[in-house]
Length: 72
Length: 283
Image (cartoon, rainbow over all chains, first blue to last red; front, side, top):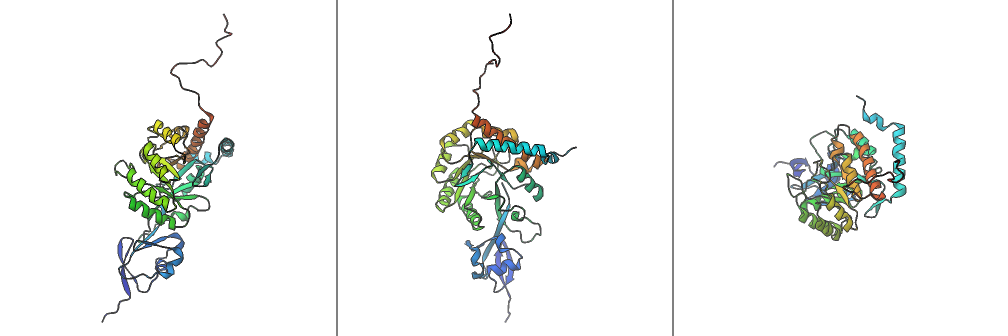
């Protein structure tokens, strides 16, 4: 029996392996992203900033992490 | 060659600018969009600047309060700093998120909701493109998205064609401002149809901001002379050889055009009329 400590997620359009047991909050921490600087969409639902810790990241999830950049 | 940027910080020039702004304030009310008051009628974009430092200097030189930003994926693989909030303080500038790059109402709504979740304000610059080559708006999709977003409480500032009927429909849909183009995005052609722009301004009650196509100061001035409430530009500043200098020029041109409109211009004639008395001439 193999034990895996990672799960596969779709993160900003790319397949990525991340640790098991992450919440949106700890995922951002692991990516060194300040929670106040990004907006998170999890499986097409926008996650409110004050509930990042309540949302677990699961196998096969699709996450979009967006922020403001220069634009006209 | 002397840098015009150094002229920009010259004290005489600064006080002249301040005097001009004071004159405009005395003659003109604020620009109110969706219940928020702005003193400057010049809105600028934050894209395409060579560096973030030049961008911030240019925006400050433009005397602008509202700046547009785009919503994009965080680049997780690169170390390059793209996040604009590290450079532009939301305390100093009013952030207007756009839906640039969206080709469907559904996408534009998604981007608008993401932007609102950033937590700054309810405003969105709605842009739904219909044609890749001209970047002209898909007015049907824009209208559809505008209705949904306005119902969700967004203050929608809708980028649209210089078409009166579409502008009227966008106002009916609940838009906080309607933003007809001067000419295609990034073209720098200036106002190609001042008559249509004037007609839109005359018929709408919500603010009319001309968005896209302004290339140089005379364009901004002519735009404001049509009586519109404001002008929005990005490429004209960002891609000028000296963006800070062009921002000063645009600030003055926007004010000049506004004041000329408020002043009420003389009628134009195709014949000469002497300015000096015709009586009292010597024999």
